[in-house]
Image 1 (cartoon, one colour):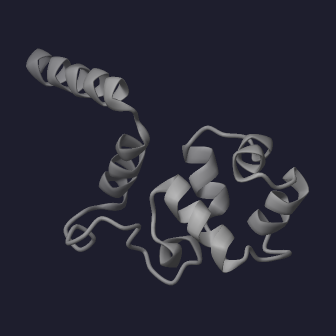
Image 2 (tube, one colour):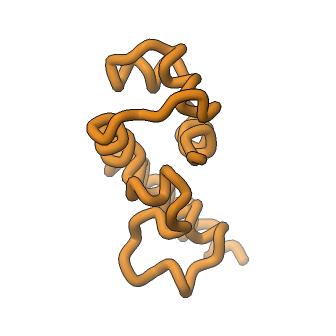
Image 3 (cartoon, helix red, strand yellow):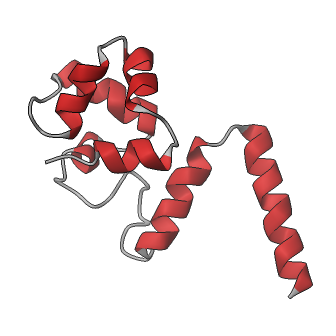
Length: 107
């Protein structure tokens, strides 16, 4: 029903941490992840903004997580890299790009 577990684990966050950020109980978030209950529209919007993916992606109506014009040309691995990269702050993005440049120069 949803991809909340996948998104949360990719972000290296606990259920408790996500629940705190969304101002809900851990039990409520756990129920969402396990499809026991469903978040409201407002909560889906919060989740979508937090994880930087579309609501359709969260509820499995689409495999496109929100990058425009990229879904058909990218592999699942490339999509994951883009999702993770998008969650980094400026310094994290810079460090990752510097690392990738170094790895490619060493080849």
